[in-house]
Length: 233
Image (cartoon, rainbow, N blue to C red; front, top):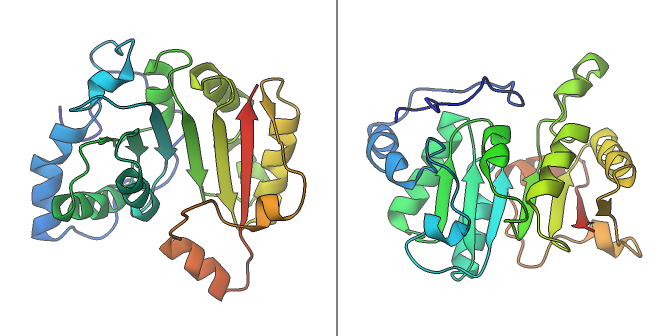
């Protein structure tokens, strides 16, 4: 299967660039040779037990949508070797950075997907995920583009379908309007709750959080990130 050649419907929730500057030779080689071996293949039905996607048995599977350069995902999959991870990143240059990291420090408990996350979400079985992470998504700040924000009623319905009861949906951003947008959408969704009890529940980074390059840039520019955690009822 070639890059972005998934036998499914048209992309629904990815509106950004697919490619940036030309890849280095090593990156291109890894995209050509390593990525096909790690990609979740949607041409086959999803297994009832997602551990079948990995080389060994895993205790659960977590999903990260839009992992950027992969700093957090590579870090987390190393911290939790008994947990399976699936990372989604349609932007080729971000995927290439992750592949370099995996070439240097492999993660047998990590699989990748290089297309629209909604395609993967609709393929996954019900109540199959132990968590979903969405960190620093494109905020689409102009009002006419709000409909492009990944957090919306339809995608929260998708999250609710694939998350196990009690599993977290974690959302981090440095954009106040998107944080408020997400809080309101999750508040109005019957399948999610926000169990925060005080400012530390959204001001402090997640346990084991390694930070990301985008987050460091946001802090340099004076924007304070927030770290929200919702629960599937």
